[in-house]
Amino acid sequence: MPDLTSLSSTRTEGTADRSSMPGAAAFLARGLGVFLLFAAATAILFWQWMPHLHSALIGPPEDNLNDFWNTWYVAFAQNANHFFYTDLLRFPEGTPLTYQSFAYPQVFAIALISKIFGLGPASLILQQNLGLLISFPLAGTGAFYLVRHFAAHTGGALVGGFVFAFNPSHVEHVMHHAGVSQIEFIPFFVLAFLLTIERKSILLLAATVVLFALNALSCWYYIFYASYFVVFHTLYVAIRDRALPRGWQLITPIASVTGVVVLLSPLLVPMVRAGLGSMSAYLSGSDWYVADLLAYPAFPPFHALGPWAEGIYSRLNGNEWEATAYLGLVNMVVLAWLYFSGRVQDRRLLTYVLCGMAVFCVVASGDSLHVLGHPLRVPGHRTIPMPGVVLSHLPFFKNVRTPSRAIVFVYLFMAIGIGYAVTLAWRSPTQHIGRLAVAIVAALIVLDFFPARRLPMTPLLCSPGLAVIRDDPEQGFGVLDLPQGLPDLPQGYLAGNLYMSQQTCHGRPIAQGTTSRNLVVSLRDRLETTDFPAQRRQLVDARVKYIVINHEPMGVPLQWLETDGNKDQYSTFYPVAYDGPDLTVLRVY
Image (cartoon, rainbow, N blue to C red; front, side):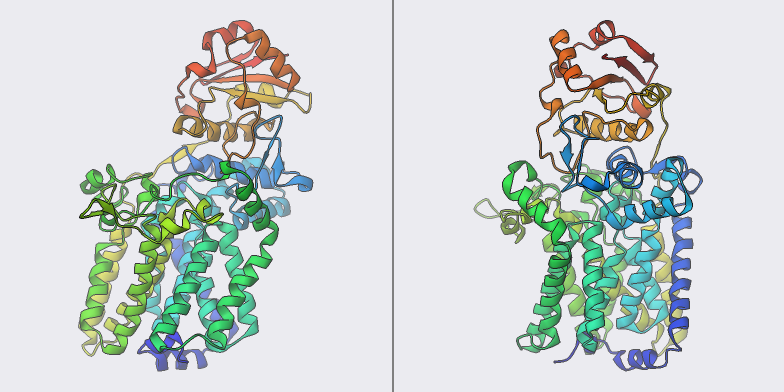
């Protein structure tokens, strides 16, 4: 059965290139050079962030605070005896962390670095930011090797690597979701998978399983998306060759999926059990956090022409970062050129690329196709269903509630096509014209993905009032933060993240906290807010020693709700331990 590389007209050149490769040292030197090149590109493109990496978190105050807590928990606060259950959140009952959005490779790398070099919590902001930014050069390096596997050309591989690493969705998610932004293992996994089939190697198969697992450990959604890639590639080759998979074409996908499930079973089994046993593990969103059809050509908010697309983004479903799916106008022109000017064998590779893009666009569409935030309907007022509507009703699968994140594989396939097009243009018969065109196109691709507008950051400052709680010699008490809002609404969600970031300043258990899934009922769900003597008894019994009335924690104003009780009465009923413009600390006992 012909392998996938037979789709490439540069198959012979690629083979010769591999056979004449000097050795491991030269191979590693090339990889290091590519990594440093993309690292320099990262520093240039995100120049706005560079002076503040030690004092402010990348992105606006939102899930980035939750990710910062994750790193703090793993590096300094977790108990190895019960890592996946903690009373630091939802005190005193505590909460499971089975579904918590740990970007495991990142947080454990930071924890290891902190331990080896004796770094304390003061270094955590810088480490967190560097842990996020390193995903760009690593992803670029991985995509470079993947594209080069098809194109056998360094220039084309560099352009393709840039397209994948600096795609707009990655830029958006690095400001919000550490796990989703850790895309660096995806191209390495795909390359290992393809090489396993091609070279029939047990060692490469083992590497494929490990890289598969690293993707899943970065963001557990990626175990699904990587599995979808395995299924897509296997079916594509079977249809292309008009033959059922056999040999390594069959062994590799089965062994890869089976191997990763077995390897990650200590994590997956508790997740499945929690999902099957508690409906609170399931959240809606499979037809809300989707890639809209008009999001593909719409300039992202950080783009120089972003204001032109504000009208589109204001009507898209979900959050800005989940809705971003801009493919790049220059990239689309390049792919069109490849299709209309390429040879037949070139179109075979392009067919693979376009089919892969189409499949993952369908996955990213969720339950139905959307246009400007509304499901696309056919005559008879019926929506156009996508395969996601089936997945969103399957146990455990329906926990993957933000399908737009599958757009990362669309960018991966597109990077292969762009890199191959650049290779053909560079080797065109009229080389001088072709190389000039490549230089111009490459510059336009960079400009099209360049973050020209303001990129937000969140300054992290520990309020002096939190030192009162931190320095209390008593052990085992908790803290109640108010207002707590409603956890399922944006106000309560943001408040929970803010309180978790403040916890890194005082280190005491808190009664609030935002986790990826709420799987328990705790004190915050039954807190008395109208009868203050009863509330005091409730808090004393729970060993909650302090109440923090948050006004503008970290400069973020919080709305006080009627369900939180009379705000002024708290300060008259409980002794005041600290009073400042950002927060007031009250002592319960």
